[in-house]
Figure 1: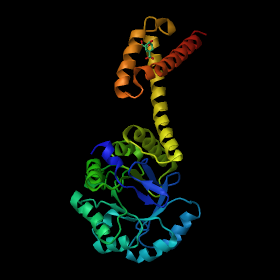
Figure 2: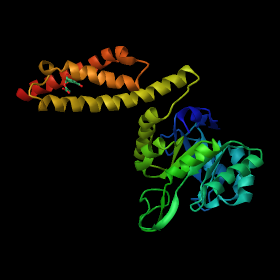
Figure 3: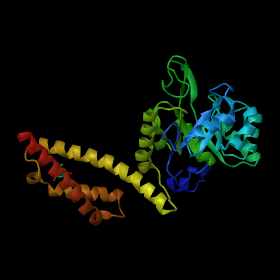
Figure 4: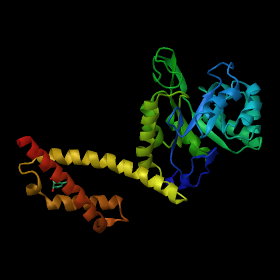
Length: 325
Ligand SMILES: C=C(O[C@@H]1C=C(C(=O)O)C=C[C@H]1O)C(=O)O
């Protein structure tokens, strides 16, 4: 599916947080994320739903999702102010539970069971629609693999126990086939955050108590990779500024890298700095860039790249002077 077609997909609103369509990719997980979630399954049903939601609500005003332990938790969830329900991977084919969850009317995040096929996974979304609930997000949590071959920090993967391998191709296919937002579940390990966003994830689901560093690393990947791979279509000044901030974050990463590389060249060239300026090379790189930036074109790019190149040369000369002192 092309980027344009993706932009036509519908977003699902988890409280105030829009997931999918033409918005930014989101992070759901621990402190610092765009949304928090609680797994009552992790507590084996011993944690009352209402108290769990109230506990997070006391410190977090944003969206809260809850993974119920059983259908007994459901009546409390809506009343407690949950913004969405997670159908855990282990529960995916409990059709009664799925139906009951869908009937709550809250958005539903359907995790793929570890052995479920794409068809079986998408069928669960259809169950929700059949109950009158179209607010469905699909979440890839990984397939079970034999001992030792899973992702160590990934969901359920210890590296020794049977682990899980995140199937990003399946996640992407689920998004394309259904037109629904898709999430990738990364547990406590942000290593695949960039890959997941590049593969089309509309968001990342981290462990409910993911470390702040994990959340920060996932947010950074979402921002920088999303700026390059997602075409956003903001509808307000605030949203457009958010999108520009993400592009600027990616630009900053690349400018920093470029200035280092240009500095390396100054040390390697026989004549470095402004004295070794190569106008032909500069013209050629601007022409090459214009192929990817046709709106700016060579005329628009030339002064920008001149400023970038001169900033690099000034820095390189400053460093060379400092080395001589
Ligand atoms: C980096 C070089 O030195 C200078 C800086 C350039 C740049 O920043 O891209 C390009 C050409 C030169 O004027 C180079 O020769 O490639």
